[in-house]
Amino acid sequence: MRKFIFILFIASILITLLVAGNSYSTDTCDHTCSKCHQLTKEEALNLLKESIQDVKILEIRPSPVMNLWEIAVETKDQKGIVYVDYSRKHVISGSILNLKTKSNLTQERFTELNKIDISQVPLGDALVMGDKDAKYRVIVFDDPD
Image (tube, rainbow, N blue to C red; front, top):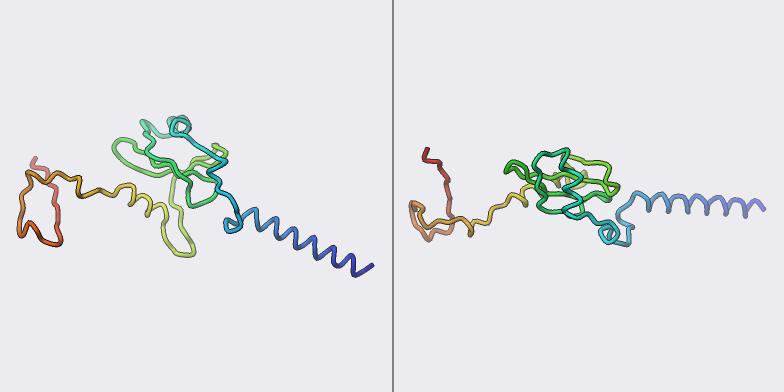
């Protein structure tokens, strides 16, 4: 009888650890949360318009952290990133840091969001100094006023 109780006790501990581990671990999740949880640009705008004046929603995607959406916004010609939880009750403004790689995931995304496609910059009336076919180019913007 003692062996049976001991085995039952060990089994209950293992089950508890497995259930608790699955609750907080992203490694064991076997589905994509974005299949079940959706947020449209219109819904995001309704959530954020009272907190952020003249906000424009640029893009919505799952964040690097489970149960959050990453929302790229623009207001007063400034781009930014905020996060909204799946319950739609909380807005988070700030950086997400990866402790393992020591990288700022929000800053990486912000840099990607603000990247300029240099091929789209009109250079027809530009002053060219040096070799126009050089391997590397520097483009300087200046305000004549």
